Image (cartoon, rainbow, N blue to C red; front, top):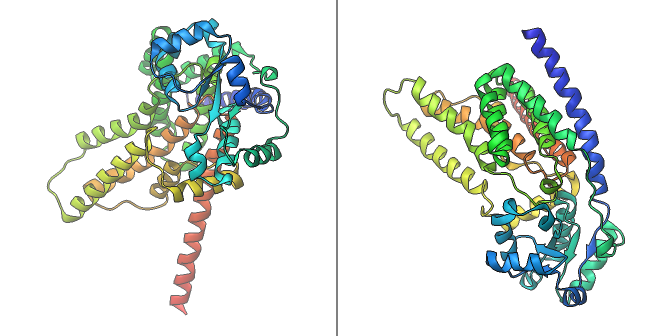
Length: 407
């Protein structure tokens, strides 16, 4: 059985490489052309929706116009999010996302920050249409965006490339096989989700595979966790390689469950299996810090999580020089792999929970189907390398202090 599992691991690796090359080809094609939507086009064609705040108005606009452009993170986007899974392909084909910035944001942020925002929308979310309102900064912003992305195309000439329906079926078979080999009950539940709860199936696969990585095949080894998380993440991404998913016209359900499922299971399992006698002062302190960490983890895992201006600047810096910015969750999680836990009841629990964040964060990265797959891989690798560099630096400092103490 061990030999068979090893052979199947190689099969997973081979197919994940093939999937990555195939999907990256289309990611590349879909991040070549972009277009500016100007005020004249809007007035002439009535094709952009920025302020639509109810479903009835939204559906009426879809019927009336041949082109519907939805501004990201606008009221119309919030309405679209509620109805997109119930719309037919005929309606969905009319809809394209446009990245829009409010005039007050142009007053608040520097040109560099605004330009990086548009570039990220294009490169990380495949948003191929830009709208900049009339403002004294507009000409400068357009010029800087064109310097980076090249000459824009006419909005009707933008093409969205997609092919490869069979990719979904192959990846579903591989995911099912992995679940069947390691946890047959997971396979049965995943199969049911594919039949009756398709938009939940990707989250369910991520939840089950993160459990298998952490408890069945990694032995808590950080290298194995990263490797298997990337492989399984690619398989999940390939299972959702569909036109509507990769252009944000459809959405998967329960993405945050992947981030919370494994830590929650570990928490319950630990409390049930470990005998607890009494509180110590150190346990109380660790528990308070742990609860604060859980609160921040939940806040930062939601779309409404806060981001400080200084953090935004750091993110922009990392995006610019690393191409794909590492996820903060993963960098923090490596801390628990490279250090020893406090020898207390809650100390050990916090360290186990901290380690469990790594596989769920990596897999969650690949659940964003509108993000090019190579960015997900690069984001994960960057986090690992940065954590490794920090570890080597700490070890060198410790040895330097040790040798100085000897001398």
